[in-house]
Image (tube, rainbow over all chains, first blue to last red; front, side, top):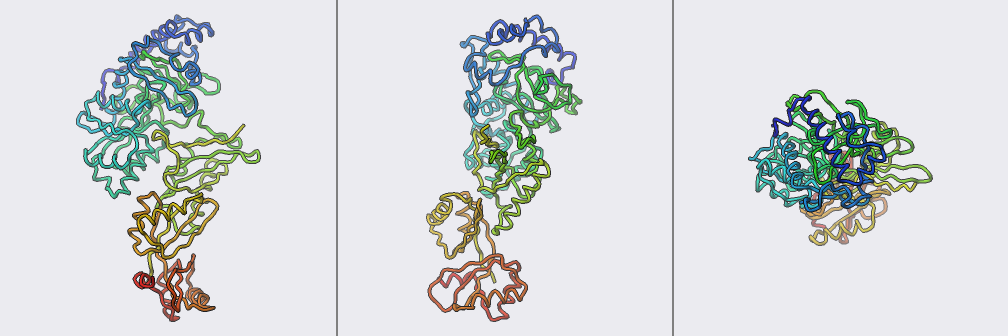
Length: 432
Length: 144
């Protein structure tokens, strides 16, 4: 279902024109209102006049997460603080948080793009949306909340965690749509099983999962266990939160809301824009946001752009399911390793659940990679030799794919740290 | 004839064994026999209790991975060579013993060992032919 027929099925010519106009206006605003951007443009010898066509954007400087941190908290504001009605921020687990400040019109935009997201998975005003994304500074909770409101659906603002309560409400309120992180969706499926609740008997039919990378295997697993259609959604605090891109019923790539977020794919090393279809780092320019608009923000997410016409009728470009992150890529003894590769391998093995954690360390000048995998009943055996065999099997499958030796360690369930419903997948203890 | 044993997965970390036994103590589950097998990373605790079903649900509610497995309870003459006879009998019958441990009991003539074997019916048959008794869950419970 298409929420905004006019904007989501706009012709390419019209869209390019809209984007060009909005980009020019954005660059002008940034130059006049945000000293941070004026300085950058001056340094690059650019004025707003240099922004005439969408292709001109490539001349302009990038914005990085580190820069956003340097000007924390209000350095990117393009309007007076009196016009800001809400502020969200990243968790700041890896440094100072990054801030997204919204005007009323930004909140309206957010509701619009989240309404598009939820509609694309068939959500209507008749649905009951159990929103298990965390409410608070994290954008997942309120973003989904505003989108569901815009559609007119019923929101259950349960927030993250409290699995017992989630299960009770799923049954009592007949929730038909679930919004949470994919790892929490699996957690919930496990909770249902433990509570002896038959997932085919509850009313869920669609789920919108994002905020962390997940794989096709994990999707199939979630769909089979929760009896719903699982949609991948994409967003980030810096840009707006969830609502940047979403999967339609085709479940084949995520439509990017291009009339509001202008995408580019660059080579993360050289910064050069890559042609469509080539894998690289996604860069986004917010072309309609008022509060904290960003010019060429480097998301560090690796994907590629697909312009193949989609059977759903939307004309917006699609980005492929995230292939990794430029900062998640581990270099183990000189070999590039993406956590997503490890996840694919783990999920291929019968009985193993995608609850894993990677511990990178350096012993005697050599990198070591320990893969912790949570034990479950299917994998468990009362015989030590069977358990050791499981470890060895995972190790050898990982070696085949990664060409790096790993040490697999079976750990007790639910011992892998989770923050805001996101599993902490990588612990790098190397001191270089 | 076999009896139900509960196996529990434990990380090889400080205090985990105490935690699992405390969990069982709180629910008044009495451990009749136990064996602990371990590696550097993890261990498997195997226990025999009076009510295995309840024990499993108590453990699962506390977040442990636990499983029910069948073991054979074999009566062993409480004298030198008693255990050797049992094991030779099984070996002769082509039965592999994966692991075994002793059962706690009040003083009597025979001891009881719990054996995890690859083929339970074959084991029971070989033992009974040799005149060695195996115990049912009820008989085992009566010993305590």
